Amino acid sequence: MGSEQKHVLIVAYYFPPMGLSGVQRIAKMAKYLPEAGYRVTVLTVEPGSYFAFDDSLLAELESVEGIQIVRTRSLDPTRLHGGYRGKGHEGHREAHREVPFPEEKSRKVLSTVSQFLLLPDNKIGWRKYAVATGLRILKETPADVILATAPPYTSFLIGRDLSLRTHTPLAIDYRDDWVDNPRHSYPTALHRRITASMERKVVNQTSVVIAINKTILDLIKKRQAGPNPTYAVVPQGFDPEDFANVSTQVSESDKLVFLYTGMFYDAQQPDVFLKGIRILLDRRPELTSIVRCKFAGIFPERGKEIIQQLKLEPVVDLLGYLSHTDTVQQLVDCTVAWMTIGRQQGEEMISTGKLFDYMGSLKPILALVPDGEAKNALSSYGAAFTCPPDEAEHIADELESIVGLWQAGTLPEGSRENIQVYNRRKQVRILSNIFDKISG
Image (cartoon, rainbow, N blue to C red; front, side, top):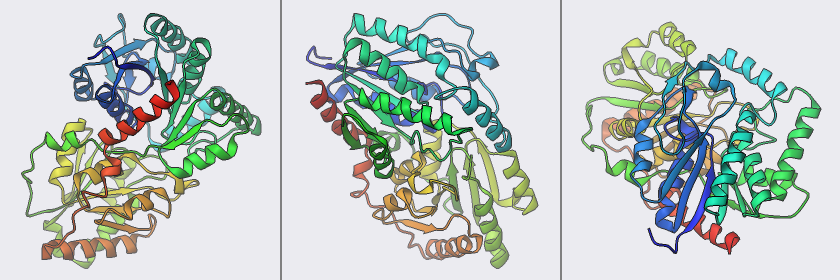
């Protein structure tokens, strides 16, 4: 790499080898920033215990020249499971351990307790270790920009601490809203006021605020009452290289395969889709030998009970958690990818990361979504079937329409041209231009 390259320090708790959706955005930013002129240092945690790991994502980053990964200790709930036994830091592949994802009822109880006791979130125990290590990094190799991504919002506090103490421009990246996050429940009005105060202090120190969509960005702007940073939307996206590295030979061309990738949590549950499938098969019993519903990811026990209750075992395949590469292969192999947002407060601001990987595959997408950002993103895709997320009969109607198009050989393909705004390589070029402006 040339000496003219600038340097960005990325603060990210969720980072490979951790898996799941929270790591994809920042991992792909790190991957493409060196070719956009920025040498990357990632400040993250030792792997510890987590719900899923994907070493292929880490291997992809380790193959890119210009990326250094520095790991620190942390005192947070994921450490309670043991996992990490620990020694080194930079780039050393540490032991890690998968732990079960809690069922939804237990998850909500744990989340409520955590939000009462720990502000801004249960990763606050990472702050002192990350700041100490970040200061050492910046003393040895000053950065032109610090980029902190959240959740967890502790990352923003770390970014602010480092920016204040080194006078380095700070960029913050919202993958979800903070104060008005629909998944947050404030135990008291005081908790909300403290959180809002934390956010104002962070934004007042920030040169650029980035969010995944306009709805979230507008909420952030509305809450601020201080110096105005630059605001920018950099949406979720897909990596075109992911699709260049998989087989394009469809394995089950005689089956109509509906694929869901990722986790279910909060209002995003499989129930209504499964009920829609049951209604479809009751209307058209002959489709039982043709339709397949595949789930690639952590699947809830309650969902398994619903599959049994609806007698859908013959048409459902639970694949478990797969590496990102294997998940992309499933996308290429499927007929239709589907996703849901469910009904919940703040539903209009949710635009899940999986939706954009789906777009990258150019596959038809069945989206059980309310009006809002996800539906808007699909409006120009050219191969989207949308319906309300809580109406099983409507979903069954849409499924039957898809069956008819598939049988006629006329299922649409997504617009290759219109999805380029979500191409991660192109997005990083925009990001690097933003960094150039704030770093001088």
